[in-house]
Image 1 (tube, each protein chain N blue to C red):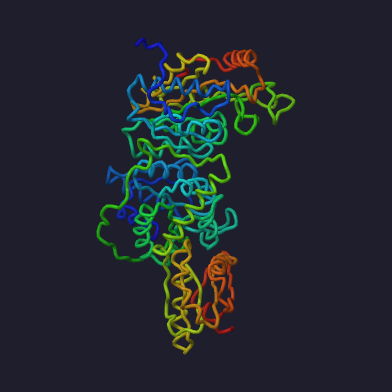
Image 2: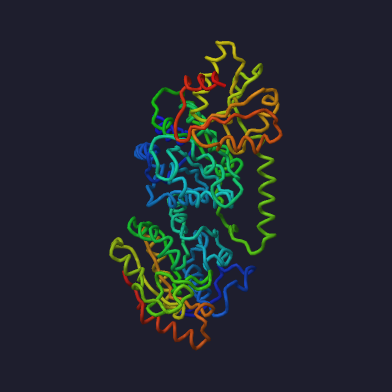
Length: 335
Length: 238
């Protein structure tokens, strides 16, 4: 199950502690980590009183120099923004697995892509975060390994953004060897260090944000990732992320069998958005179809980053609802 | 040196003095008692200090100790996270009455229930001082705050340590001292830290003065503190 894979991946990535609060569809991550803690006494688990405590627990562990993570969804993701905004302000390498459930509000416990904006930009800040949107079970594993590495290397809060389908899906994956030690892991709160995220002066915080923005813009080109699927000769591109991209990929193969020159641009990092990976390829398209299980959250990121593309962007939104390949094929054929 | 002889705490960060608190504030007295306790116990090298939002955040560089400011009400869970993976450290959460008993109450209760080996210091001045003196769970009967301009009368006053004593582990330590009785407070703080070192939860509430928001002169401040010491009652509660 996807959730079990995530817990094992965190272990192999070098995580030593999890702080979490149950919420469907992410709860098995917590439960699986609990079983891992029984086997390995060096691991810690705290089921906290709420999601805020879970988020700040992860921060506390990171401050002590011990890689830690949490997992949540929907309303829990909302509550955790309190902690994630502090992680952003103090550059604490928290790792969080977000298994998107339905939005708005409590909504369904199943699936949506309604937490893109929240995960990328939640909090009263600038979205100095790294957000990986996975597309299948193997990627849950691979990108969790990567998330811990990247979080500690660059010191931005880092997220695995998946969904209830990936969380509950069962299948086989390839497990890599134990990952070895993470780099740049050491106590953050140590002798001589006094940390604050409170400022007196506008100019004082202004300088901090300017410095962070410089760092983020410098780091982003090493971090950005996208999957460019059959785009080389394509005239039409699908734009999709997460599990919608998995369906879109199947649709691309089927449509190509019928002679349509179509491909897929799939951002893997939603923050930072992979502008460097897509600009040249997408510039050649005649049309781009954006597909997502939300109302334009992905499209908004795309439009913001690719503002100078003059290609028509057709947004196909199914808020809170998934896509099948057949459906995508029909939608494209209708256009 | 006589244990009761006040000394300038060695764990103070001299570069950050004079401190940032208002004249007449109780915080520096509580922090001095804490600094002396840390010195006398010889634990500075093992101690990590975490401060909440509100006036307590002004202590973010008060000590020459690893210190972090957190978010409002979230100091205890941050301290829990740290202590979970750094069991050899002595972790002190420094919080106001709003942080401990309102916005962060669930953390205070749960940490006590779990018997987390932490020391929480709650500075209780019966209102939200940093934001201008609004109603808190600790506001006493008929007290005028900016959100109870006719005097508070709607509900009772929260007594934190007494409330926690109903769920605290038998080895936990709960006490209420006063910033105006610093030597007694220091003894409570030492016992609280010793309790943490034995692996148990400890919380010391320190009644504190806020002349800025109470709008009291020196005499009025002392009178108000005397009243609070009667209203809340000082001593070791568990």
